Image (cartoon, rainbow, N blue to C red; front, side):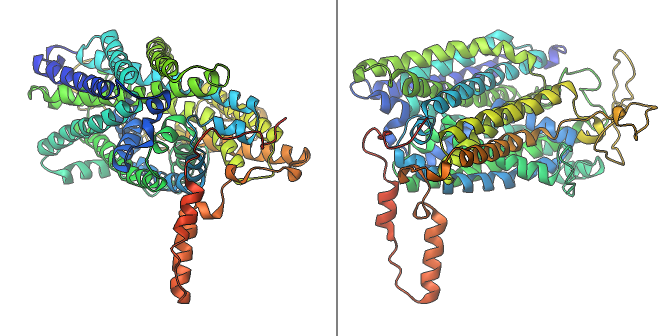
Length: 604
């Protein structure tokens, strides 16, 4: 808290409360609609009747967490607009997902992504992947709940645990009552609120600064327009290559293998709707990233001469955007409330996604394989699991205080868990010679590699020469703090692959202190290690003699690129385009009618 000027007023709380009530109302609505019918499968998958537009907006909303809303602008503020290169990785990741994973998962009609691993490899592989998923989901959800509540508590005085409990309660309520349909349609409402919150800040900043050109000019003078950086040094935090390569691996792991995202596009009524949802989602991701970058540049334009973080007005960069909101919107009653409602909407969409996904995985991977129950009991258990995981998420929020800066903490979590799983699923879908031994060993090896680089990052964090934070100053501040206000962070002139302490001889190998690569490469390291180890172990253990059910593998007829190429080829050759073979394609990608038979797939 920084005085009365930073307190929310009644109108702000009204806006905030309306958003929470609106989200809860969706859950009640879908609970009422399905009160006389429905199964656990319908509850967890939406009955596979959802359309492309709703699912695409839900995919974007689940990505647009409080971490995105608060941390991405702070990342641009500190490291520049080069962060926008992530948009390229969005396109590459969605294309890879659409061409490689979507056809196989949609054909199998599985409720749990990890069910595929038992069909393709072994039950041990499935269970280990499930444990990794729970570790990821619980840590990430705890961070998403805790971080915005802490930021708003310190900047506006909003009660910390009141924010945490209200977020978790509303999420749990509409997840337990309405299932996936409630989650998806609530996401549609929430993404509108998120965009409105972002736009309120940007529009006010542009008005106060006299136009967007002033903001861009300030950013240019401050080195924030730094797109020309093609350094291949893997230790650098942000370059074109780290953002595009690291981002592609990271987003491929999210859209290709992460249960909440797969569960969403698998809920579409046809595979064409599923593909369309993924590609429309790219537009949503690009819009979100654009708003984040512009917000970060607005932050710099306002605080270029008096950085609130260096001046001690906020305790972490994640609080900069809320601080700006209270600085420029406090005189407009309700607008700060709209922005903070956007932050909490971002939390709601992500947390509800995780709750629903954890309920689905628990039901499909732990309960159904062991216990035979009626559909009515399975539906009640599904709702009970949503309630249980909502309570667990509140408990996990307590651990989030140990994770430090949100953006990097989230990237490390995804890198450790997402990379090895991306490698494993890619092996399963693309490499028929990879057997169960290779799959399991690859997963374990990739996980070990990702954990190792994460530990190195914690023990020996990257120095300023590699992270290259841009100049921040407090020379223009007109208030006093403890200590000097003349703090700046100069841009280094000569990057190095290692650092030494003053007075040490760089020729002495013992003087070298090595650092981890960019946090964006953690997922790359885990994924590639998993693939290489899986291939080697499989070849050494008779993988070439492996026989795999073709429905578990990607076939050329599954891909959109094959049919596009065939259409172009037929047109050029003057032949008759038998449009495919749409019948063949539809047959290949038609969801399985019942439980997939895993007896044909070899295991240990």
